[in-house]
Image (tube, rainbow, N blue to C red; front, side, top):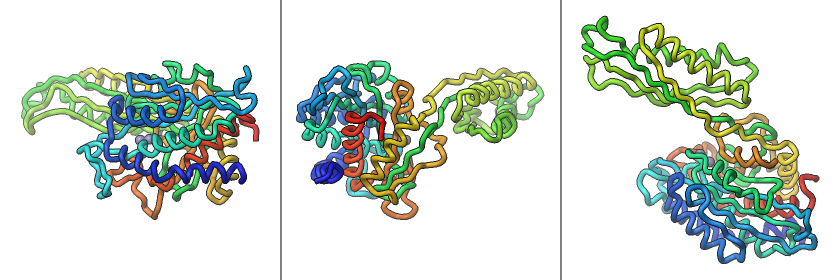
Length: 404
Ligand SMILES: [Zn+2]
Ligand SMILES: [Zn+2]
């Protein structure tokens, strides 16, 4: 049996139990930093595998499990350690999939497929633990909370998930409905955008809707600010670079004949390069403040740095592409040309060590529901494919590093 057959057979053998786990997680989604039951399930599964399991990371629900290989050289001083990471949180979305195992928690659902990521990493832990004699080093399994909102990955990294043993690479996957089931895509270099949040509070002076001259109307100024922000990307960012400014929420006023005192708007800035990021942040602040000043109001502009750009190391991306091509055949594997402006907090891991996130196709038909759609479901049939890839990535990396 070849190495490839071994991992894919072992992964397939776990598939029925993994499907059960995935559907259980799907029915019981938990939001960021509240993955208490999910974390317990992960710990229970890992503890049956004879690994060192460390709990309590990232405000409580993060889990790190360490599997020491027993291949010759695994305990040598220069033996490698590699991190494999999954996220565990769901989203505040009311599920409308109509599936028999749909969410049992009204208003919460695994609409980003993190139930599939968690299950796939558990599968890799099961298969690799049974094959530790093939591992010439250590695998560190990182189960993190709060990818969607809260940056659980940052806490994991800051709390030393990659330090003991010291990992020299990290890998992760994300299920994706734009690729057919079991296909793999990897973007080399910048893969996901930096995502920053901002809040603009316009302070005017309220009064009677019939006497606007006695007021400073924050709604008219807010409308101007929204309109002017559309020029930040189109007029201030180099057309060959990428950025997004989106206002996602506006709150002001209660009655049709009352001019309110204040208006609040919330938005997001996405970018792929640090200089563009800083330029757009400054332009948003200057634009809002300047327009409000001209209208006699003030604007308090708060911009908070969110996730960093997630950059797949080119050598690690090539390594994953090679492993995937050997395992699945070239026609199922593609290099993705363009990054997405979505954010991904695996970027915190990749700021620390080289590595890559690959995208694993979950679409079983045309027009498969997108991520964050109330109809999305991570296809169970993708799980053994992900498990086998994680296993081969770990085995090969521990043996040869990123060489291929
Ligand atoms: Zn998501
Ligand atoms: Zn996600």
